[in-house]
Image 1 (cartoon, rainbow, N blue to C red):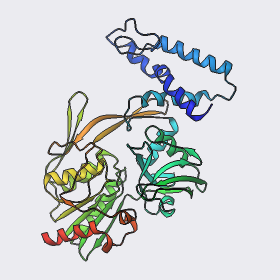
Image 2 (image 1 turned 90 degrees about the vertical axis):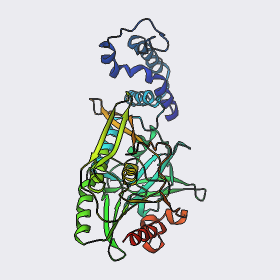
Image 3 (image 1 turned 180 degrees about the vertical axis):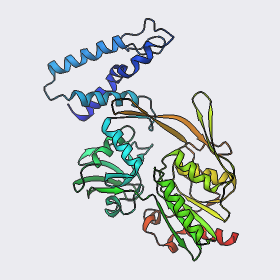
Length: 407
């Protein structure tokens, strides 16, 4: 059976075996199910009819076992079935994670893994896998993969975004020193080409800092993982000890990360008040607040179209509190919060559970944040941001100008 047919089977039967994880909830629901549509396996109350779905699934399984001429991997089919069920939600950020995918996710959030070293997301227009940014110094970076590239095949197998991101990540991971070939579509020039890459141990240094233009501090944050807060705090304190006269925080091409980490970083910078708040399906809200600490020198935050999620939380807090100035281009526009629900067998479901808002109550989902100082970076420069000389970085030069002006 082809991979496509496996996936279709997963979607069709996803309504079925997903009852394994749902049956306990349904059984203890105070609203008892009544006669429903047996063919669909859904009761008139909207609950899953476990008996009819199990019967249908067993029937399908029996047909395949009896008549299918090829090999049939039942465990793989079950994983695809759960993926299909969650895929039916229709949200690109809500997904089922198999045991392998969940392990990969946990490794990445801890900041160490074996792979090619690239941040990816789903391109909502094409449904393909979009490169947000390669990690500086990683195999992907050294191989010339650029922000905005689309990964369309891994070792010759076509890959897609949405729920397919987990499988693509699994394929790009592997043993250190082994080869993986990634097929890239580069929209800027319309070319498609193969990039052979040797997998390496990736130890993500998410924060880089230095002094620029004599006495201005510069901190670049590549993503917000478990190590980022401590790395940022150390970099921030080192720069402050050097009596810098202004600070540039660069979150361009930063895909986001952990909410508590960005909140802790914002707490160091913004004045006392709301950093962000989240609103859940039932209308309840959760507020993340900062204490009385705040930066006392001019601050500029650099953003662009690949600054997403947690990056936008930081940018929104800086902008709405007036503690600093945003420079760059309109951010990605991911104003949603996901939560991981482990399922007990080593797999998990990632679910969009809330929208987040800036301190002024603005939801940027689908819109992004447009900086008041708008500086569009030419594509040929934006694609080489990590190796761009300071003098050629027009967004950074504008940030320096603003800080000089405020001093």
